[in-house]
Amino acid sequence: MSAAVEEISANQYDERVLGAETPVVLDFFSTECPPCEALAPKYEAVAEQFAGKVRFLKIFRQGNRELATRLGVSGSPTLLFFKSGREVGARMTGEDIKRSALKSAVEALLP
Amino acid sequence: MSERYDVAIIGAGPAGLTAGIYAARARLRTIVLDESVPGGQVKTTHKVSNYPGFPEDVHGSELSAAFARQAERFGARIRRSVEITAHDLSAFVKTLELDESETVEARAVIVATGAKPRPLGVPGEDTFKGRGISYCATCDGAYFEGKDIHVIGGGNSAVEEALFLTQFARSVTIVHQFEQFQAEPASVGEALTNPKIRVLFGHEPRAFHGETALEALEVEALRTRERKRLQTDGVFVFVGMVPRTDLLARYVELAPGGYVETTDAMETRIPGVYAAGDIRVKRFRQITTAVADGTIAALAAQKYLR
Image 1: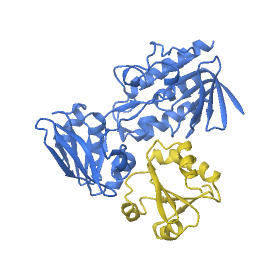
Image 2 (image 1 turned 30 degrees about the horizontal axis):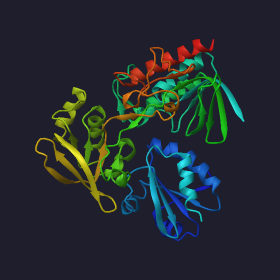
Image 3 (image 1 turned 45 degrees about the horizontal axis):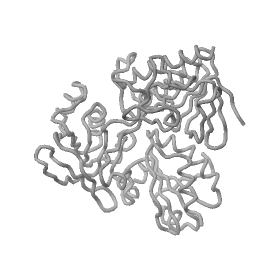
Image 4 (image 1 turned 45 degrees about the vertical axis):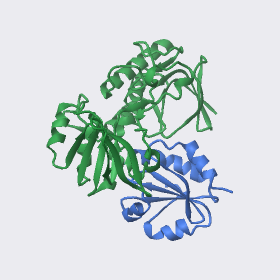
């Protein structure tokens, strides 16, 4: 696993996502999910590109169902974007997340 | 940095991977490019029952992986999760730029980009995508453990995926515009006798409603024009596919529906550029017809390159 993307669990959500000083991207992923497999290398590549400026986290849906339900996440992969403790921008979900589109969404998080 | 190949195949579904097998076995330097992992639509199909050679059902993900392994065994290079960010297919040597960072050159290109799920195009669909609306049962089915969900559509995908979803959901209601299913009789029979499946024929979705996540599906009874809101935990949409022809649209005029016309040797109007699989104008789109297209495209490209 790349060091640029770190896996968290629901009990770290408040601190690592809402309490983060930098903008955060959070990826809800599942097993037996080809679109998640397809996203992983793109997610890591973009994470490396923004290392130090934006934090890239991922969270395993099956192990963190309650948080997924609370956030209204019902599909994998789903990317959520956070800035100063609030979710911002449009979520990205499903098979068709392009690297270029992800990059633009992340750029929009930066001042 | 630029890498040179004989054939570049765009799309690693059944058509593209079969083209890859044939091209690589013909000792052509072959690369297969995909924005996702190999398999195309098959990789997220729960099970495949009509692909010859598998007397028992085979999981779509396994069949996809087998196609890919076979192509790689003969030397085809498969690049996963790459995006084509620029392209020139009209020149004698065609060029494809990958992720704005590398360039692939090839004298022949086989476009096998397939199709993606057709959205319903009703209000609320974009808002609730990933918040209750899904187009992939294998990916998202497990989110709906013990829930009451709806499936839109009445073809093979809708009926088969509805059956798959019964292993998670408490109830699955299929909403279909016609008075009967268009799916194969074998799966229709199974669906109609499944205690978890209900069917609402003669209804069309009109809107999705909810606060932050999807809560209700609004449908219209086509005969009476009466509209009603159905409480739902989730909706899976299987109402056909739209071809992925963004790449080819710059070079050829597309037929109605966005499909690409080819000769029976899979040639497009551009010399050295072939189209294979679901993106073609044709009557039947099956895994078996896609692999046939891929075969023909690779053989035709091989002749062209000689």
